[in-house]
Image (tube, rainbow, N blue to C red; front, side, top):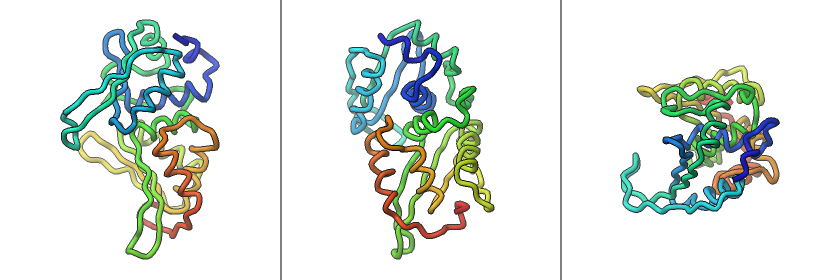
Amino acid sequence: MNYSLFEHPLSPEAKYWLGFILADGYLCGNTVNIKLGIKDKDHLQKFFDSLENKSKIYILKDIQTTFGIATSAWARVKSPRLVQQLQVLGIDYRKSLIAKPLIGLEYDIDFWRGVIDGDGSLRIRTMHHKYTYCEVAICGTEAVVQGFANLALLLVPTPHIPKITRRKNIYGFAVGGSRATKLLSLLYYQDCLALNRKQEIAILTKGIINHEYRRYGS
């Protein structure tokens, strides 16, 4: 096990996985867990490779999810030491309603790419059947969503401040148009560690000419 991965100074690889675990992973007892849709199974192998861990990826069939019945891939690493390392860095049990940006990583693009890969969405949309439009969005706790909004406003300033939305305990934030294209070019830089399908979308957006869309503050 590569325990040095989450030791200071943190590498871009470590910062990415901290963001991804914060968004889409969880701690249970002495284990670190990540469950993804079966189409993202290869990403779990990247996680094991970073940890130099040879654990098995489990396939869970006919699992009830928010979107219906699905097949999932599950990475489970049993390691009290690894759990302790993550807790020290700010990832803890029962984080779904209390997660917040990790101290020192509030404006780190590798960390936020991990969060977006876990709890964000990238879209290339056709607006009014006339032109192509890019959008990046995130959902999660108020603190995490506000943290990403702060990063977006720093990297791609706008006089039209996008609003953070709320639906029960879930908050959301989206950036669209040319601001989204620029933001994605910064987050998904060449040869960065990323979820394959989202990195592919980010690459595609580089060739898009976006029209401004006031709703998202472009």
